[in-house]
Image 1 (cartoon, helix red, strand yellow):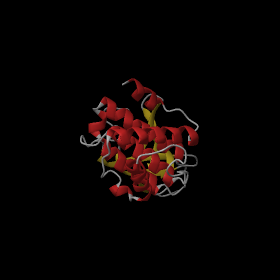
Image 2 (spheres, rainbow, N blue to C red; image 1 turned 90 degrees about the horizontal axis):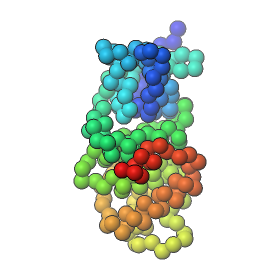
Image 3 (cartoon, rainbow, N blue to C red; image 1 turned 180 degrees about the vertical axis):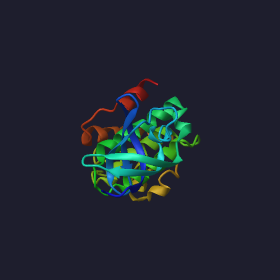
Image 4 (cartoon, helix red, strand yellow; image 1 turned 135 degrees about the horizontal axis):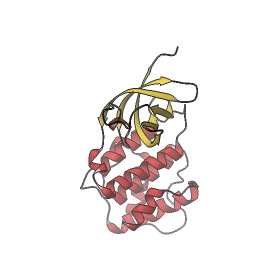
Length: 215
């Protein structure tokens, strides 16, 4: 019989299973992206009910099975409740979750992606930060972490501040990513560049982006 494992993770997705259970996808510090089943998590009295919601970050106790894990306990440190109560913020957050789900794999070292996701969700909760800028920074840094970011586009003439922002995103630690602001014209260029790179490197459409486009 295998021992229980303790992991640090964020809930990327949660799907109802049967009458009372949930299937969750977790981005973990220790084991990359994994799937876990939470029995009875949809019951009002379940200690796992809130822990299996999107954005929940904390420590999870799991029992490893042949093809998936069973969640037995959780100690949540941040529910990101402010995003869940903010329609626009929730969809930005869900886009970040979808991107992480796209990029990450089981048993890969995904520590940097987990750290980026956590810091980016925190940035979305800061009212003084422009969410479009947070999105651009998140998308570009995700490409950097995965070794796909090509830097400043060779085509086009960009403002010096735009080039500086891109170089900063590439070289900055994740903890210091969200410590700058840009003008509207620079943001417009960053949005265009990040969108072009997304279309070039990610072969998937994101439902959350579709919703953000009509807000």
